[in-house]
Length: 311
Image 1 (cartoon, rainbow, N blue to C red):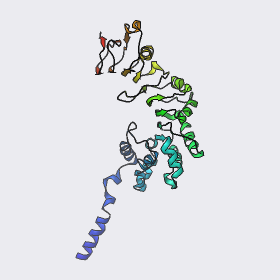
Image 2 (cartoon, helix red, strand yellow):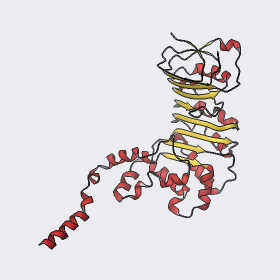
Image 3 (cartoon, helix red, strand yellow):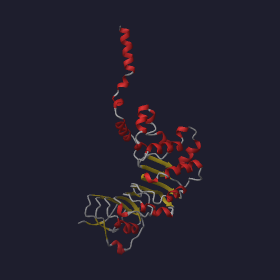
Image 4 (cartoon, rainbow, N blue to C red):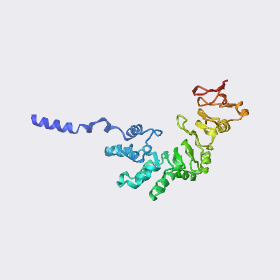
C-alpha cells in the first residue's frame, strides 16, 4: 500500500500543472495579458530578425492553447517593423522558413485581420539595390497603408527607399500619429513627401524630431488645424508661419534651429496658442518671440529665455 501511495503521489505531482490557474483563464483574458508583454512601439529594436523572435512569435511556441489565444487576437500582430539594411541581409542569408522575414510578414498581416497597424521604417543612405523578395516585402507593407494608425520614419542621407512612401497619396485615412525625422543635418527629403501628410484626415500627433531635439525637423506640410500634439525643431520663420494654424494644440514642444533668423516685425507679434496646456521650449535665444498661452498648465524651459504674456 505504501508503494501504491508513492506511485499515486508521483502521478499527481507529474500532472499538477494541469490544475494550474492559468489553464482556466479564458482566451480573451490571456490575450489581454499578452498585449501587456508587447514591447513599447516607440522603443523597439529595429532589427527585423529580433522582431521575428520576439512577442508574439515567442509566446506562440509555449503550448497549443497559448498559440490559439495569440493567433485569435489581431492586436498582437499589429506592430510591423522595416529596417532596410537588416531586412535585405536577413532575406539573403536566411534559410529557415519560419525565420524568413517575407513569410513572417505574410503571416502577420493575415493574423492582424483588420486591426490598426503601427509601422516603423528605418532607412539609410547605405541601402543599395533591391531583390525581388525585398520589393515584395515593401509592397506588402505599403499595401496596408489604409490601416496605418501610427507611422514612424527614421532615415539618414538620401535613403532611396524613402521615395516609396510618395505613392501613398489619399491612402492614409486612419493615420493618427506621425513620428518622422532624419538623423543628422545632411538629409534629402523627396519633394512629393513634403505634402503627403497634409491630406491625412485623422492625423492628430506629429513628432518631427527626437525627444532631446537633437535633429532638425523636415519642412512638412501638415493638417495643422487637426493637430493636438506637436514636437518640432525648425526655423523661426517656419514656426511663426505655421504654429498659429494649429488652434487645437494641447501639447506643444518647439525649438528653433540654431542661427535661424526672424524679422523684427514678426518677433514683436505675440504667438497665440489658445488651447495649449503643456508647453516645452528649447534652445530659444533671447527675445525669440512672445507667447500668449491663456490655458497653460505645465511649462518646461530648456535653456530658454522667453517673454510671456499670460492672461
